[in-house]
Length: 194
Ligand code: 5GP
Image 1 (cartoon, rainbow, N blue to C red):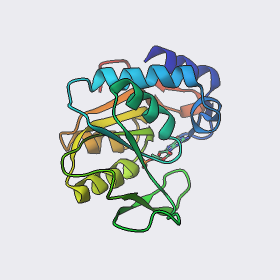
Image 2: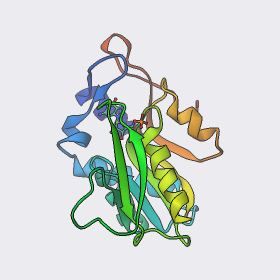
Image 3: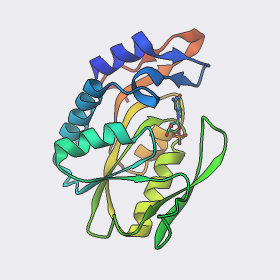
């Protein structure tokens, strides 16, 4: 997606050979117009998948997911990283090791919001080693729901997550795929080349 790639080139900060900071439009401050375009792009790419719900992870997955949910006219559920006082009964939970924070979190959703009749699109901000997506897929399995596919805003194609999830036969749609962050430069994969 060209507008996303331009935004990454103009505002992204390469923190190391493996970490990109995009706090100015996705992870801290949010660019609503870009999020709307991202939501519409996810909706177009999964238009025929029969999606009934979107599942994401707090907090950075929420903005693109809500925009996709608005376009697709389906609700958005976000898994919580910390147990809250109100999230107590009938939980589906999974362990997720965070690539950026180097810690393991238990993520949970209430069983009230996803069930075996749901066809779920999983959305997240970044795809690195795939741990967050695997955790969300684990939750869907516990709920007995079907997976429509995975929508990612920024995939780091030099890490293993995308390959691992595609090898399971799952449709993964990443709106920007980065092949390298070497020497402080962002290099994108050409569209159509996976
Ligand atoms: P994974 O679970 O695929 O290893 O990592 C994905 C998660 O880690 C995303 O939910 C995202 O929050 C975070 N993440 C991974 N790599 C990056 C990165 O380069 N930049 C930012 N901002 N977040 C990342």
